[in-house]
Length: 166
Image 1 (cartoon, rainbow, N blue to C red):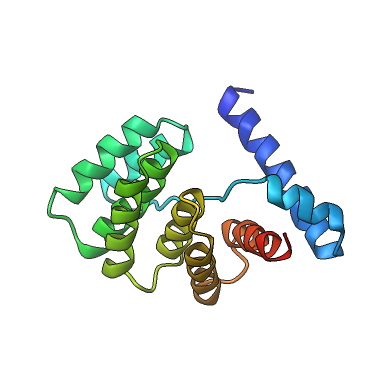
Image 2: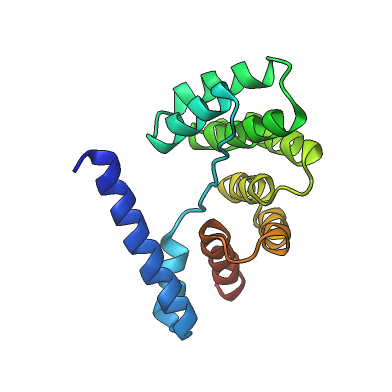
């Protein structure tokens, strides 16, 4: 088992426990959910740069993800691929601590594909990390309307619920 697989297993178990506790209505669920950070949802498309960006994000190689994302955005690719690259850039910039660049990329992704649950989810996650909890909640809610039940949306909705109870 490599380090990435180990981290994925731990994240899955932590997410599963938090979701189970939230479903049970436990006050411990709120404490556990509050301790979590938002989840980003990476896009994978047939575009080679976006696919490389997705793979880099999945491996935690944030600088590589930024490189491939900027390459995809500047390549003149289709709106769908560009929106996916922007949404992934949103996540990568946010994870790299570049909040302003993250929010700019998120906004561009949502403008390009307003029907993308991943773009709204990532915008919400970037807003959350920036301390803009109301804006984050609005994007998490919209992502849920577009595709309820996705694991990232469930986790992020629990963060918003926790903040409201808080």
